[in-house]
Image 1: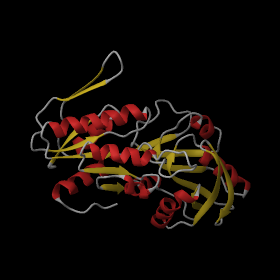
Image 2: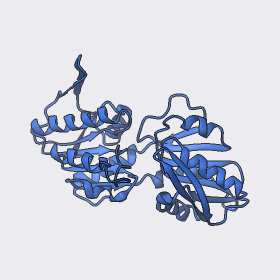
Image 3: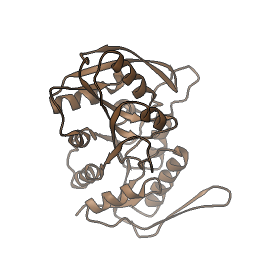
Length: 308
């Protein structure tokens, strides 16, 4: 049994409960209410004095609410005498704001990290952050886990003679290359030109895709603009249908569903770092990262190294 107790926020209680089950525990009780003027009231309903606590709370939309709730839960645990408090943030909101595109831009990722450190979280666990270097902006240690092994297992069986793993942009190259190596498949990259924060266009392709069925690998599907543009470019270059899309975080912000439904995609596979869409208009499968998170928490409790 784990040395850590689990507390779930309201962002994704199903995942928190699944992690607790993997650890052989029930989540600790907590009360989270909203006042008439919009403030959150957070209370830990059980004694945490001298105990190690893992707070499971992804920070997807509404990002601000989920972040504030995470901070308040952490503060409640620290003030109640918890021995150590770990923030388990499977999806890291503001993770893409890790560098300034213009002189007046804020660094949201650095602000996020400073806030977690100010609450005295002892450690932060994240899964496939958009930029692994984001941890440099945190004032507490950060462990980055990867869901790629879990996702790769969900891809089997595969026609190895007719498939190619594709990174839809350069930022996804390391993740896609890891999947290609594990599956023993060829690897290609679509170079992307970002026109604005919400628009990207695919450019040249490095690697052979003609006659092959692409398996696109990325960390995040938000509006699916990058994925859609890459698929259109791949088809122009003679890639074969159907196409598979794999990503760790399925945010599916508007108009992602319409874009994905309009393309020759056989299936979209994501993890449950955030809640899955209720009734997607495209073929969607979700695999759980609860075992991955539970194993990491177990290793932390035992003082062991984490496998990323």
